[in-house]
Length: 95
Image 1 (cartoon, rainbow, N blue to C red):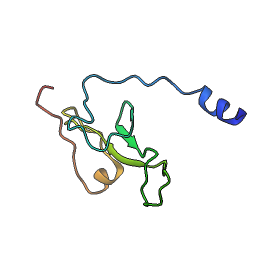
Image 2: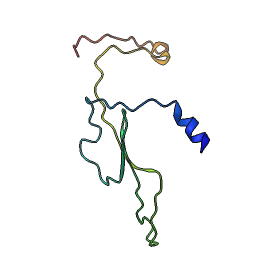
Image 3: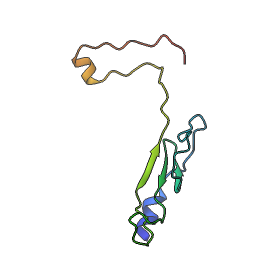
Image 4: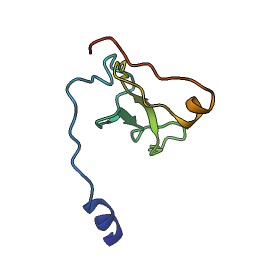
């Protein structure tokens, strides 16, 4: 128990970005839903997955949802881009 307290002591609070709606389609099932800045996840609830009349909480995500938005800024060249002779053009569009 002491290890768990030490491990989580340095975590930053989760601050959701209102510009993203990761689960806009309300994915099902909505068991134990947790929202994080980069994604939303639903963990398995204590239900009977294997039909043995006992609850099974598998502790694994049943689904993970995230919203991706287009990045219209300038790209950062990678080593592979430069090795293959690709040049990076800057975007003329405004965000």
